[in-house]
Image (cartoon, rainbow, N blue to C red; front, top):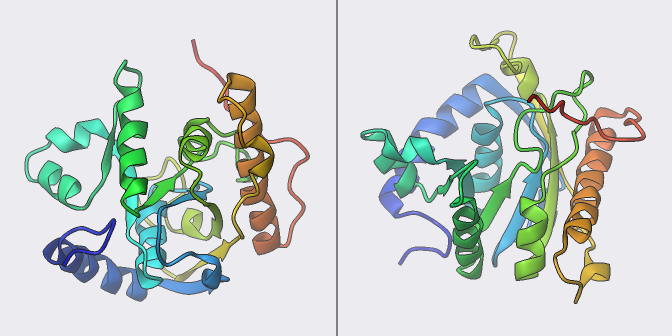
Length: 237
């Protein structure tokens, strides 16, 4: 019988067979406070975004701790022969960016949460552009989903992926072996927003609380002081 939020055993085996040996071989693990990760029930997991290898390393962390990541993935991948079938079978949710169908992604994620899935969100929407690699301002998708479902929002900060594949680079730096660190926080307290309609200002406040929780964890992980205000990604017209 398939576990709630998990793919078939075949696709779990395929993913684990490929990802785990590579991850164990190339990266040292420093996973802290994984006991804060709920093992059952729908959760929204929010994380900072440093590198294109983040999803692989975070997925290994989650699977090792009993959760399968439901990842929101660019819709174009679903139409690629063979790859599209694999992505769909691995329970990813297509993201229709910049279209009237964008709301479909959140509706599908909401359905998965009701089934007990762990939906992985990078609220920044892309790898951080902050010069010191602190989290940027977030987008409101995770906040909207949190208010709609009431499921726990679990923040996870991580550090080290940027040493393996820096943003903008196509050539990984595998040696010397890098350490991938994670720190899981308690659920973000969003109780003050209960009963409030998801207007734009409320969604921005919830998003700011979510990003503040991630940033505080990253500061603890890095043992450094974060900036007072999050970096704003420049808007190109």
